[in-house]
Image (cartoon, rainbow, N blue to C red):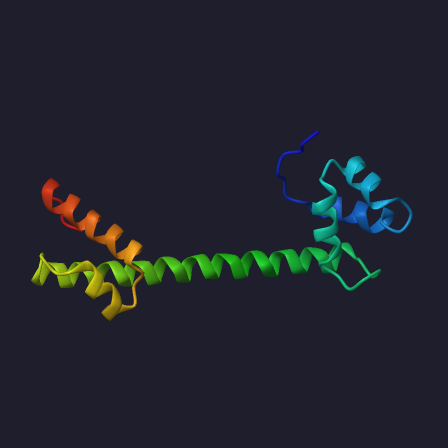
Length: 128
């Protein structure tokens, strides 16, 4: 039976810490209501055979913060790219998307997405 996605809480980590050496991993995953793959991934947060709930929780928080920073950085980059494309197309609305993609190092698919967004804004009378 497939289990839905869920985050592993600190309380679950404490249970893992108490039981992972005493119970088969697949059985432990069933008892905790997580997939065995999730359990194995969780156990890799700490050195082999040294799993502690505190260390795993700290690792999870660190990874979460790194992910948030990476997402913010990607959004900033795309915003800068969009403003660059908007500036170019403000001056030359008939610019060649393929050439601009090569010049600016913005992938052509993303460039097309920006151009389509600008065209919709122009038709709708919106200003970004």
